[in-house]
Amino acid sequence: MITRLRRGHYLPGPTLRQLANSHSLNHILIAIGRPVVKRLARRTGCTAHLGVFEDGMVTYLVKAGRGRGTIFTREGTQLEAYCTGIGKVLLAGLTKSALEQYLAQGPFVRLTANTVTDAQALRAELKKVYVRGYAIDDAEMDTNLTCLAAPIYDSERRIIAAVSISKRQGPVRPKRLMAHLESLQDAVVEVGRRLAPPCKDALARGR
Image (cartoon, rainbow, N blue to C red; front, side, top):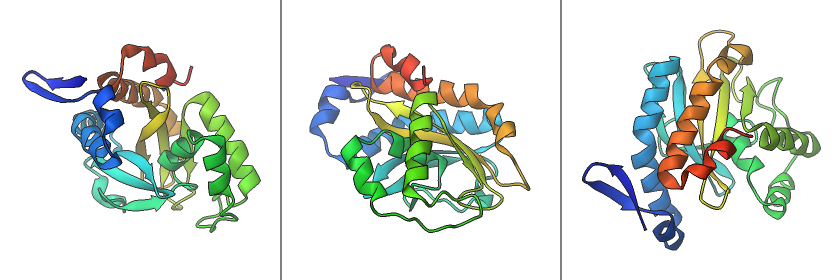
């Protein structure tokens, strides 16, 4: 019924969260995720985010990192899902009907030369994201921005949130961020472990 945040501090556990609304879940994710996201940012030297899917958009709940001012995201604001790392992870976790409803809104706006705007191509990309357990934004939202994101699962193996690391300093290609994939996976495992039993570890690593 409850989740231990730290000694003497507790939050509602998975059972109580099922009875709570999305705002309550977001509050829990922020409380649990903020220290994890901060450590991830320090470890990788990247800007790190934690976000959720709301009303067809990505809502950024936590942002951390020394270079966070160079990236235009802000806590509490929203961005499109189809062209962001966190967004693609969250879209990959939608039910088939919810995903098809989202894709029916396409074609999508092309923001850079790399933006995937075709619904069929995006559907194929999201299948890859779901199978491998992470998503890459290769300058799809912004020409000089590259992002790597991984999912957080709840106790029923549903993707409820995602964590990402981003770089916006010159032409940063995905291969450089992939060097931090293990650190990113460790971070989502840690958040997931606090939200649900340890059996989610393998799922959070995309196995």
